[in-house]
Length: 79
Image (cartoon, rainbow, N blue to C red; front, side, top):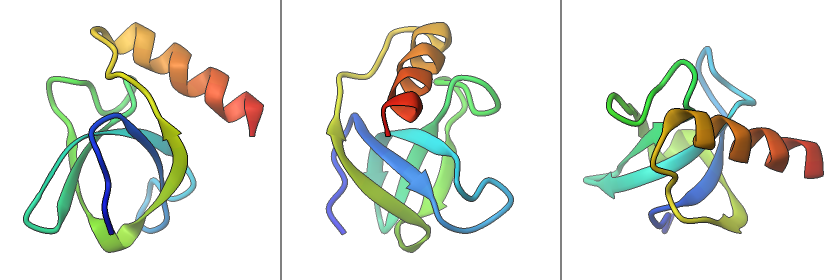
């Protein structure tokens, strides 16, 4: 699975399944994800690529957690 920086993804497995995240980077079969609420930009969640689903949206990574929460909230309302 090819996930790029800024890709909006949905968790498919784990206690956070169904939640939206933004991919900050990928390496060695894992993606580092943030949602601005429970997983901040400075402490992203490391998640196996098999456990996330891509969306067709790629955005620039916001500078603050507040901007990230707003971006993901607007995206979830549009789907």
